[in-house]
Image 1 (cartoon, rainbow, N blue to C red):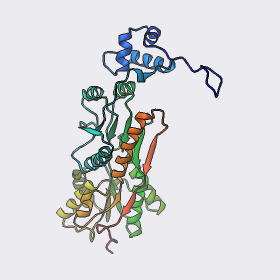
Image 2: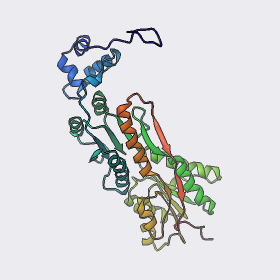
Image 3: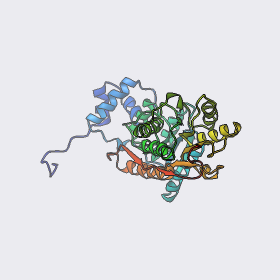
Length: 343
């Protein structure tokens, strides 16, 4: 049979035994790789995977029927951020009649050692990572079973081996800082997120760009490290506000950090926004309930989660779909925590 468009015969698909013979391993070893099981060295697994691709092996012949499930691996599942992402995923999954299995990562943003074994037993439609990481060996085992992976707000450097849904964090950092500059602030500090996280570095870069554009020097002592937690805002906010030349405004890289800055200011007898302007990030529900209601950068987390869910189900049916990263727009929500600095 020939291809009508090219006049050439389609490439012949290899059999399992042919791949085993070329790799100089048993058929059982090839089967282990195809089924994502352990007991195969990394070098042998790479050699077999390469041959399967080169010889056009039809992996779908060995794949079991997928369960109508999505596996979600979420960092800090009990946080407002993690909760909002799960709600967005569940909304689309429910509409499509798909179930969910939700697992929290360990502190390192990684799953437990047996997590991928459970996923392979369940054979879900796909996996969504929420600010989580997967070791390369786990990714290889999942790919061998044609289980797609989609990341929301990926942890670490931008991944090129799996599609991701993120937000325009550089623009968010720029908008927050420019807002404070337009109010007349020049002594503007920032409490950042983890330096290994793409979202953190992008927000910091936007902060720097806004100051540079206004001709305001970037002061290293005004850049304080954090982990997006409330405790960061309390400790780093207190350090900043008790320094020799305290800032008149603080941009916190998460709403939780901003609430910590509120607390640091309160314990020092300062009032927001009369004595200190504060901008948060994410626009979680708690931002509008804060006292005073918080100016913050809105991240469309619910929409990001919905997009990721639609994408992971589509990738199961269209594994060759070309897709890398989508950045959804951020916007500034001005409430009552920012004002012009005192004269």
